[in-house]
Image (cartoon, rainbow, N blue to C red; front, side):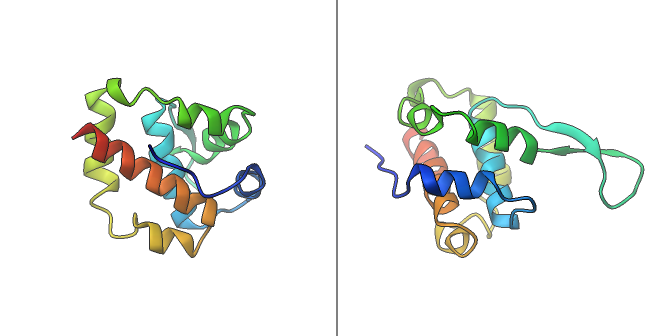
Length: 125
C-alpha cells in the first residue's frame, strides 16, 4: 500500500500557485494523464500564435476536488489503460526531472504525487 506524506493543506498550497515551478507542473500532468483528464488548449504564451496543451487548469480543478486525496487512495490500479501507462513511461519516467528528490525542491506535496505516479507504474509492471 502506498501512503501519502502530505496533507490537505499541502494540496491547497499547490492549487493556489499562479505560476507553479516546472516540477510541480510535470507531476500534475502525469497525475492528470493517469486520471484520464485532458489538457486545455490555450494560446502559446511564447506568442507563436498556435495553441498548446496545458494541464495546469485541469490540474487546479482536480486539486480543488474535496475528494482528490481519496480518489488517489481508491485509484483502480488494476485497470490502468495501457495508453495512459505508455505515456507515463515514455514522457515522464524517462525525464531526468521526474525524480521525487528533485520534485521535493519545488513542493513536498508534488513529491508525494510523483511517488504515487511511480508507484502506479511499478504496480502495473
